[in-house]
Image 1 (cartoon, rainbow, N blue to C red):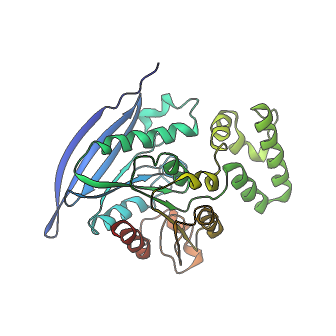
Image 2 (image 1 turned 90 degrees about the horizontal axis):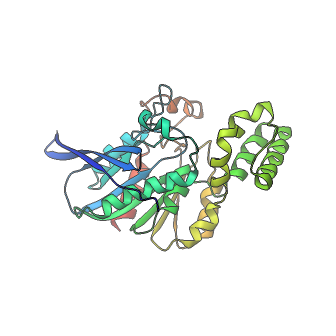
Length: 306
């Protein structure tokens, strides 16, 4: 049997903020050879701890991707939620850490779920915090849901309400009905044979051969079905200016779990920024200058504390 071991490296520092001292710890968690370095911040012990689970892409602990996506939304969230007396931990997704690149061949969606479980396992053994709350953003909504065992509360932000194949089909069909039909055929062939012999040139970025095992593994899960299995307090959030995940997705998740709390935040987009102008939507992905939604912070803080 193959065992997975957890290795930890800890560095602690104290940063003065006003009259309060915030503790900031750099923690390295390993899932076999995969390194998941992250940052833990809190003002005092015996407080709730949020663990953030990323969306798709090579996202780091602060909500940035490479040299292009510089929204910094997770860092903004960290700073805001800490002020509410809530501890926060986020880690570099395995796909954002160059040290992991040589180990990513053959990566499956469930590997991301196992990464989240490793992080949860570490903090379950840390008695400084009163409970663990999982926040899953975008793709991470389902990832956190599947990893939520042994946690106290679950929060979905901008989480799709349908499986990834249906999401991709919807998105492509909006751009081109013809390409949408081709996408449907590609998924049919993938599900039946495990591969796609000839990919449409315009769809290669999605259906590249190295991506197929990951997509096939991911498509096994329907979020609206998986959320029915959850028994802990659940909050579902979406923004009205989200151009990636629709409000209807949040409503579908809430319908599947009527005991959940549903909050739709006006003028919040996918990277959690409050926008007055639609024209700023894409610009907010490339700059940290746009403010985080204050309603998001208030909503989550109230849910955790009540």
